[in-house]
Image (cartoon, rainbow, N blue to C red):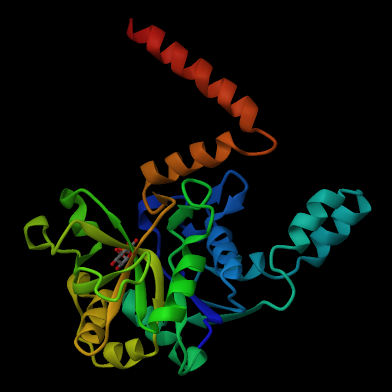
Length: 302
Ligand code: G1P
């Protein structure tokens, strides 16, 4: 079955970016001039997604507004003949893409956020994208991460999770998977034989970490329904996936592009530098600025 729906869990409070995220959703933080959530939505649409399901909470209205039309702004831009900007504002979502917003009543974790969308997703496979993980497909492979995963799902019909190798000392920040040899010979995929949420380095099954891109079968809902709270007192998607693994195959997709962890300040700054340097308007000037800045900094060390 084709993957038509994508879930964006955007209810998190973004405490690492306070005070910026006190009244603004962390998913609306811009990489130069495009908010993080728009990158994730564009990746989903490129993979053939037609329905965007946002699981939100209070103070996330800006996300809804961003993907809606803004009559006043559009009229102003038209009056001022700023047609290029008008096009950007009007074409955030292509025609035929629909949005659904669901409130997550309590901050009970990623697994609970997925469960909140059960009635909208129904009995079909779907994608989950965490906007914090910005995957830059212009580095390395030119295909979007989710496009590759959706195409792989057409062969496996089993859930697929994006992974990346990390330093084991960071295992406490990620779901960690153990991998088995690929007996089915699916290109780009490896079977998962264990999955654990945020283990200590000594308990991690390997150094492969789960990233915020999933293609899931609806079996995940049954697994999540009766799940007790896991680490951090939350219903963990990873724990639900561990249950799915008891009966079904689960595959890991090692990503090809470069991933920026925009859920922390350093990763966010690195993303801004990478995207800023190739920005059509300011890229060259930014490059000159950085070169001069680095030279000055090097001179001050002499
Ligand atoms: C979530 C998941 C975790 C995954 C991570 C990827 O954690 O629970 O398994 O590795 O996203 O970014 P969070 O970053 O929300 O704590």
